[in-house]
Length: 528
Ligand code: ATP
Image (tube, rainbow, N blue to C red; front, side, top):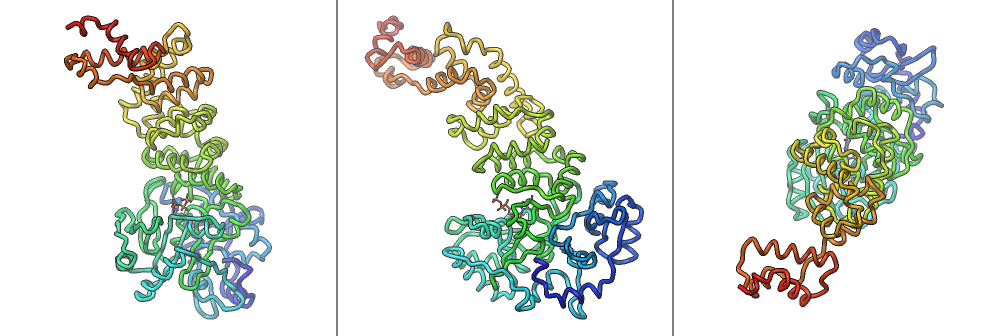
């Protein structure tokens, strides 16, 4: 909600009811509990030498203590966005976009969400968005169900961000204020799209005309420990948006009025191309957000807010990436790979020293760059791509295990890589036949070979020759051998391999050459 939109009268009332904000010194950790419990306030203003550092919400303070982090108010203070700095302190305080923050409207105590719903007609002039095509149709269909059930319906998250950016989005997340199960069932019947219940967070999924649709009840998430998956409980929309990763994704579109719901300044951040967190412990709650940040910052060309940098610094200090499970890490890497510029996202992570924590040491990204540009890489499936990426970052067993490859597979990869390194001269030698090189490389998976090729650019030309030759097959097949009267057995494999080697080495051009070759090389078999 933009402060510019709030009518001055309402602002005055809100401020007069609140009284002056409570302040706490940046280092006075021992004062915080007392101030919160005595005042009943949800937000304190953190000061240092009378300078406002930012705001500390009860929610964030309690979160830090539940994680057993001894942090000082100054470390957790959320710097007030630019737009608020031109307002007097009291107003900053009352308008702080904390979902737990309550403000006054006339005589009534309201939450920010109620405040938004009240929407004084002219002065708030809410931002209206237009939906077109399938999206407009879908809105009509969903809205009629929501209205029958008398529940609120919102499009939320990345889809709203993409609408503002005029980018197409096929992942649509809808939030209803209650009764999600019934809503989902009726919607599924109406759209004739089967429902999949995603058990983890009680959400429902369906596919419709190429859209992946998620339906969920507005909820609050809380984390019992850093980097663990959250527990969920129903909550108001403002809380649902506050639990999200960045302000640009904490947007909602009220589908009844088609107005933008923007409690945390996401539209402004998007407009000013800035990535802003919702609170300083954001990456401690969920370090996967660091990888998400890499994608958004590079995809949309976003700068990082001071709060973001402070949250990042804390995440690095607490080494939160090391707390992530291998499955979650792998998933984030896979999501980077489907970005238009995956390499830029890796560079972003490296520049912020986040890969160091992952790889054990600062990785050299040039192998990765070469790998991503390699035309053979595109032929790999998703899992093979992941293995190739990991090996290009580091072929070390510990790193591979950390990313969830089995101990056996990791040891094998490390050994194979070592073997390749030892065979560099063999691979380059003009005295070794091409077929020998092909057979040698076929011992390992293409993912490992491509990663190796990326590590050793001096081998590029030769490796490409070998990889191209790998596709060579003789014209004759097992069936032909049978027709020639050779009885089936292990000899088939030997003969076909021999034929293939000769063909790779350019000794055989066609079928006739192959038959003559067999007659010459295997006279006993033919005479038998
Ligand atoms: P993309 O354009 O990359 O698909 P998206 O915004 O659609 O991005 P999703 O991963 O589909 O991202 O998630 C949908 C929404 O759920 C996000 O916009 C965000 O509001 C929220 N979200 C997803 N992952 C997280 C997370 N790790 N922490 C907080 N909020 C999240």
